[in-house]
Image (tube, rainbow, N blue to C red; front, side, top):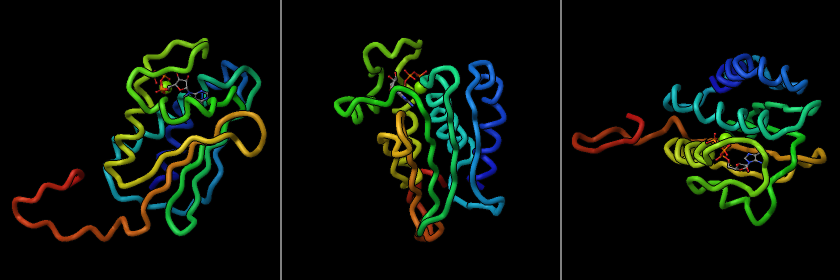
Amino acid sequence: DLGAVVREVALELFPRAQAKNIDLGAEGSEAALLVEGNAVLLRELVKNLVDNAVKYTPRGGHVTLRTRFAGSPILEIEDTGPGIPDADRERVFERFYRVLGSGVDGSGLGLPIVREIAELHRATVTLDANPAGQGTLARVVFPRTHLQAPPAVQGDVYPLG
Ligand code: ATP
Ligand code: MG
């Protein structure tokens, strides 16, 4: 349940948001939004994106986590941080790449991990300008036919079993 994963991660990062006076909120129905995959990896994906949102958003900002179904399960994380310059929007998915002058410690590995986990789940992850104003909108779109994997043939290897 993607919604449950998001609520867990929100609770875990809540103290960090609170320490920066960031309003961290989750939106979405209480109904389960089922995604097939590896729960530990999906949690890691969500955590890395929320960690970035909280880390790069200055004090007093807003971070909104949203799960919804629009033809397929979608996760959105909106923040009111500095945004990611157009020229860096794809490069931030490269290992160790960090935007110059982001002013916060990091190793540049979070987003490459996010993309790899997304790919394992046949999901796409994109970063855009936050349409609500300043900041970033991270979006993960899961496939609609996720539960219809072909039957396993002996000897075949499926990445997520
Ligand atoms: P870590 O390995 O601890 O996650 P990191 O946060 O620097 O380190 P990534 O998560 O891969 O590494 O992010 C890469 C870079 O993209 C960041 O250094 C930052 O410059 C930029 N970035 C990522 N998310 C955001 C965001 N929500 N707002 C602004 N910049 C961001
Ligand atoms: Mg990071």
